[in-house]
Image (cartoon, helix red, strand yellow):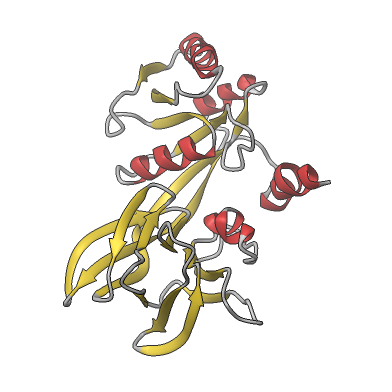
Length: 267
């Protein structure tokens, strides 16, 4: 069995943890490459925090490969193992694990009916205002029908996986990742009503932004890419043809992880 081990060496203690994982897998008879080719690997292992797991899992999904996240960060909500659970790596060799599929969304940025760029999101696509503390106007339609017009700091379109990230912080609902839907949540809307809207993933959403001449709006993809938007820009949201495959080596379910990783930390 061949593994590609992808560490985020910017995180403290990751090199040492990566060495432990490497030695453990080699002792189990596996073939391991550091930052090896995803295409030729059976499993990709991301070592770092949630951001590392997210980025590595997205890349692996394009090759149809499953990802195991090993937590070397703070939260590790997307991770399948903690640093003190490396004995469970033997289950990878024996095949004693499950693979959880997570839907992703596609965000097409268009102008004048032409697609300028396409992006795949595992967590969310976020429209936000620029540096100035000025609200922007965001229009949302579904399959050609107007849904809402929001004057706000921005708007989040998340997957169920992303429902526990920025969307939750903005007041959105927590959605189990085995669902297939989009969650649209306004960011600090200038309104007495602040509600998320959940759409079935077979729908196509269209968003556009209007801002004054002294301000800018941007589209952020999974907290990374920052794409400037103008009044002629339209963002088309649909379900991606790719899905992320995350390896589970432990029996705990989403709700147990939610309590352990998020709710208990607040108490």
